[in-house]
Figure 1 (cartoon, rainbow, N blue to C red):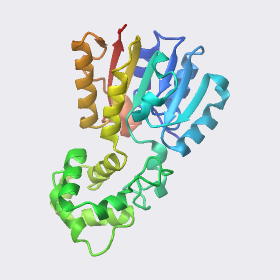
Figure 2 (figure 1 turned 30 degrees about the horizontal axis):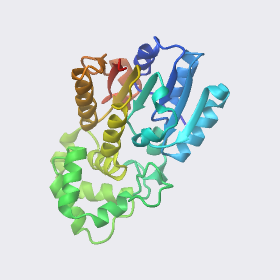
Figure 3 (figure 1 turned 60 degrees about the horizontal axis):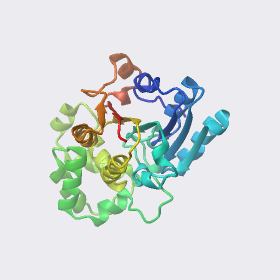
Length: 292
């Protein structure tokens, strides 16, 4: 299964001043960043975190050639404070996008282009967490509309939420939801979108189901407690995430806790976007802490 890490060259360029570093890859996925870092810096060690057990298994198989230089934990970055010796790393890398493995596996329910159950949980082993199907069934119209607007910036959030609650039977599959959205949005609107009409709704549901906003806030809070020098790199794909990272970096800088290395967010080159269209919305920000 192929996955091309977004702005990989830019990430490696930032890390090159830490060739002997201990690196935490906070969003391991299929191990693309970890593999590149282990290859580029032969003396570094990497610990990968991911909440998805399937991703952990695939990444560990892929990276076993690096022996003891690589290790992994099944843990969400929002629980960073629970990672052993978490404040001993020199570099922290977080790619906040959804894993390509999750999108391309229909039974995970992330994709609006493949039919599958409306699940969307990044950790399907957590039976206590709400699936997308359960969210659509249990949440009221007003709450759904707010989720679609806040996390998807969907202009027709209220109309789609109303259509979901009027639907004659429970929405069970991704195709059910896509069909409802297509039936709800006026055809002229869909033609002018320039993208799939269900994209924003699926994005919003994914962010809600996995509490991605809350997990990112918990992560930034945990990082803010560190008292050692470290490089922190974030790649985000949603304005909500990028605003929080930007705001936190500015606060740290104002408090004298380090310096912002990216005055403006770094974005993918035209060549990278042509090669990997999913990179188009990526924004990279970096900060170096100088706390003592």
